[in-house]
Length: 493
Ligand SMILES: *[C@@H]1O[C@H](CO)[C@@H](O)[C@H](O)[C@H]1NC(C)=O
Ligand SMILES: *[C@@H]1O[C@H](CO)[C@@H](O)[C@H](O)[C@H]1NC(C)=O
Ligand SMILES: *[C@@H]1O[C@H](CO)[C@@H](O)[C@H](O)[C@H]1NC(C)=O
Image (cartoon, rainbow, N blue to C red; front, side):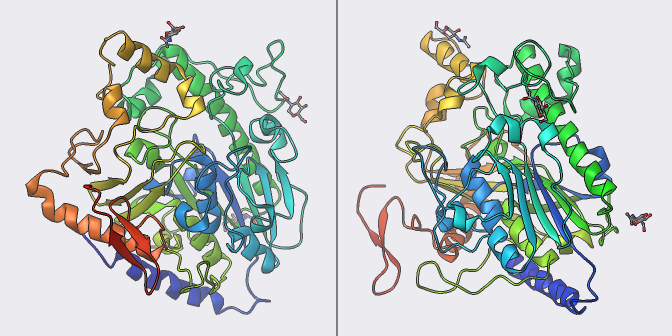
């Protein structure tokens, strides 16, 4: 299962393919567009035209940091978007980052964004067409699917990023529309109407469809009502995706547009969003290329991550990643890879990395992880601190239930106590194959010492490669002169 050269080999592969694509002269090249959809699926029509990546993961389980990695190809610790972008949180990517929309704009590709943006600063993420929460209500741009349509026709090739806000929790900001904004636009009094959406209601026995997914990672009981509440905004989003694809097809772009569908972070439940366990990291990922029909409808087991989206889209447009440095040191290298080669034969990609530092500005809890084959290793650097809880998750019925039960001395009904959720081991090693819910930490088991060591080495290597300032944490300090090295603190960790 251990394939240390995995990344390098696939890069070679990607660049070989790139070489082939560049062979046609500009004038002879077919027009190529990209539609990138961020949301969650009921997507039969699209999946029949896609390779479906079963092992797709985010590289950080938090909104702005994740979107920044999608749009830069750089992990959050490298592009600077350590936490949420909006309001007092105010996180931004570094001014020198060359993002995907910037590189595409420089290559004369028309760029557009519809829906939730949630990244900055503006000059790092320039879009020619923008219809986002920066100038409109996020409910209108991210949840009103009638507003999520292709912008006007353009002669140039285009890159359109469509970002749904469903089914983000709503309880903390717009409680009048329900826990997941499931009532918004349903036509009831005060809820408004969305002309293109007919809300679907589910009876508890229909909801079994997703309960198996949820129970796999969240044995914490959910009320039937709550399950229905998650599903309704999902139908709104599905309808929206259908609309956008129909418009794309009606406009005659079906044979020249790469469509990528994914999501940005984990489900907002315990162990989910803001965590780097499987339930915080797993994503849908469909890649539909009209030029690679060989594997349409097939499932790929290759390990892919949201860090792969930027390299994929650059590859599609035959654009190289520029040589530049953010630190004044050596040039940046993307550690993700183009997914286009995986649309031809099945690749043997078995490794992904992830990195989280904050979510809200108060929620500092740096974690790094490598997931390779059947094993996931987590490094919880500040493991002596309680795991931080975000505002909208705090007010969720699920977390309130956890708190209430704990306070009154009842069992949580989940496989973790609240205390176990807060206080983690420094190293967590899980065998996903025999323990998919990640309950047994094998890090202290001598039988797994070689696995632990190998994964730890690879994780550290990736941290150095991506210029991670946390690379020496928590027991040493990174000193950059005369050359970067970890200087021990002797702090007993
Ligand atoms: C959604 O957008 C449409 C088109 O602009 C508008 O007619 C409708 O009122 C909006 N729905 C809601 C719930 O705001
Ligand atoms: C796209 O290609 C398919 C298969 O070659 C063809 O049937 C279809 O008409 C094409 N669509 C457009 C809009 O050109
Ligand atoms: C938790 O307890 C508070 C205070 O007793 C109560 O208002 C709330 O409804 C309870 N929440 C849940 C989810 O049980």
